[in-house]
Amino acid sequence: MKQMVAVVLPVFGLIAIGYAVAGLRLLRQESGEALADFVFAVAIPLLIFRTLALADFSGASPWLMWIPFFAVFAMNWMLGDVLIRRLFRRDARAGLVGGISSAYGNTVLLGIPLTLAAYGGDGAVPMALIVAVHLPVMMVVSSVLIERALRRDGVSEGHLDAKTRARNVLVTLVRSPIIIGMLAGAAWRAFGLASAAISAPAFSSAH
Image (cartoon, rainbow, N blue to C red; front, side, top):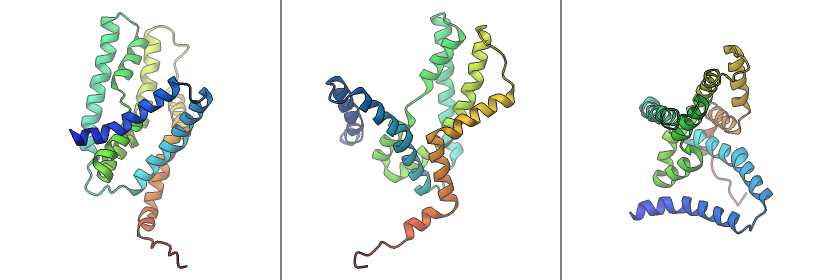
């Protein structure tokens, strides 16, 4: 119990502090927007870069993590979609939003801090493997399902061919700071810079 409190309390305590600061209006709205931009454009990409560049992937089997993760993800997505459309009698677009909301966990903002706090460097490996494929796969799947939902609801302005849809998804991915952080971390690792940085001797103050 103490270990759980020690892991969870700092993360959710920070969230509570953020709510309190916003509620008491200690910072202006522009400050909050600037902090959010910094987190998504700088802090998270750098965290993912460092995780991918320095984590020890030896012996890790990505499929043993991807299969159960995405299986549960797909089940929650389908359950949320069906409940919204059948129980609440909503259209396909609302069902898609309900499915995505049911399935998506806060893998980056909460998953990474909690995992690193609980397991340290060992927890970085599974999180890095999941994050590395989560965003690209979900963006492709979501783009296909959005177009399908628009056609089912009769509000689609026209069918996008597979080439155009793939180009739009690729452009969005390439411009994403998270994807840029992932690619930079993978490149850093591929060129052996991670091992060089770790094995480099510390700079002596005497020099």
